[in-house]
Amino acid sequence: MSPPRVGDRAPDQGVLDIHGDEVRLSSFWRDRPGLLIFLRHWG
Amino acid sequence: MRDDAERFRPLGNVALVGQGRPQWAERFCAARHVAFPCLVSPGNQAHHAYALERGSWRQVWGPKQVAKGAVSALSRPTEALQGPTRGDGMQLGGAFVVDTAGVIRYAHRARESSDNPPNDELLAALAAVATKTKGD
Image 1 (cartoon, helix red, strand yellow):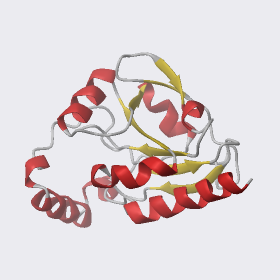
Image 2 (cartoon, one colour):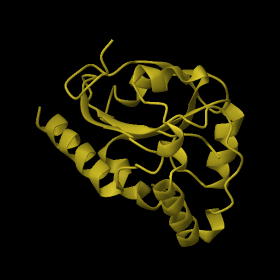
Image 3 (tube, chains in turn yellow, orange):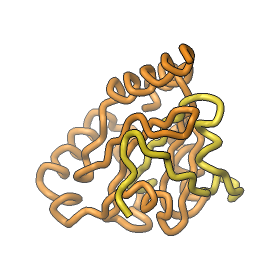
Image 4 (cartoon, one colour):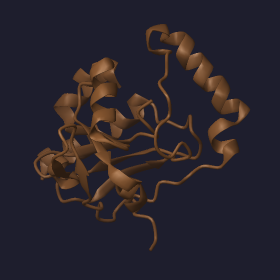
């Protein structure tokens, strides 16, 4: 599978919030543009 | 990122996605007063879906990366005490701007551990999408 690029649909992955509840990434771009920052680690 | 929170907020939704457990994210974000939602992707599935690389030792711990880390620590001494790296220490990061149709409008995949796009670049990318969204 080729990496998603500009112009491609963003993968709508399920992730967990700090309470352990599942959140879809699409919830961050549904109503307004979204900026997803992927961190290497939390340290 | 934290310093520019008020510049990001009017332009869109910002979220941080890390690896590991929710409590790791909670601890980190509380200690650093992170102004945005902090999320985790168990097994790094989201990182994989966005094709973010695992770095080599050189990409993660090379002289350039260590030097950049030292400069960053010295410029923010109160945040210099980095905690232990949990999870996959070779995972690299990235940043993506997505419009309301779910289409990627900006993509940055880190090529090494200190390869973080400047806030002004992220703000410009988000502003371009926000402006277009308003004009639609």
